[in-house]
Image (cartoon, rainbow, N blue to C red; front, side):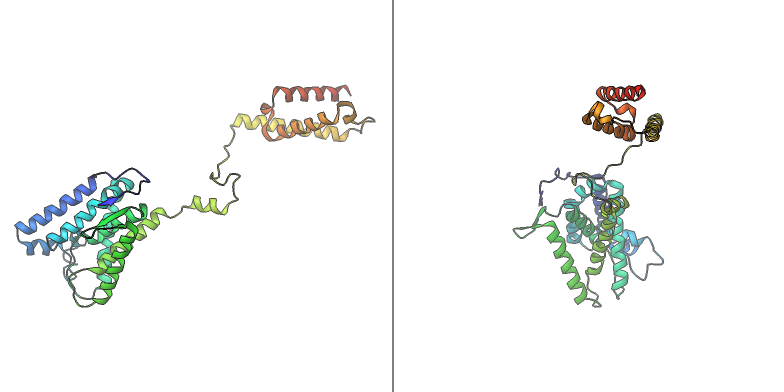
Length: 303
């Protein structure tokens, strides 16, 4: 069993897709034991010779096993890691991912294994599920049965990959009974799926190359577009301010500066109010700012 790292809620005991996959594997194995095992294996397991006559075997080979310990080890690993991955992915995506990894195992077996031995077992798909768990929860610890030691899931997957690669290379062409390259194909196809699933999208790329926001911890926020009525008011305010500035520019300079009559402080406050109208519109003014604007307008009219 595994020990949760504690970053999220614990895994569910069972989920729909994992339950269905386990039940289907057990049902096929029961038929192998009670009926003719040779016939069941011939119709459901994959062989290069029967690939054209029985194309469904590229899927059904995942539900046929060579013996009790073969099916027990695969279903035990699926039971340990599958429910939490399914809960994170959703049932539909989990089923697709499971079959995708199994197909990746079949493809690697076809590409790298020269002999015409059969292919059966859920190991490629199950190892893909273990990889998905290791990517999502890499620091969870697993008891390595029957050894009294625990390993983090990421190191367990790395050890499995290394062992399969080593034995796959050393036993290539010997007709060994274990499909090492199919296991590696399940891991590789799972890695491709997970990369596509977790790769940063176009929006993230744009955020990374854009300017850094004022607060680094917050992602850039889109500025909401004001309603049409507000835009019209803002446009009218901009026109009024522009006309006022143009009128002031065409008039001759007074003999007594404005600052001497209203004070330098009020002149600066008026500039701030005009800037605020240009940016936010008349509705953004406070009562004191409106009063200042009316006062200055009245003084300009009196002049």
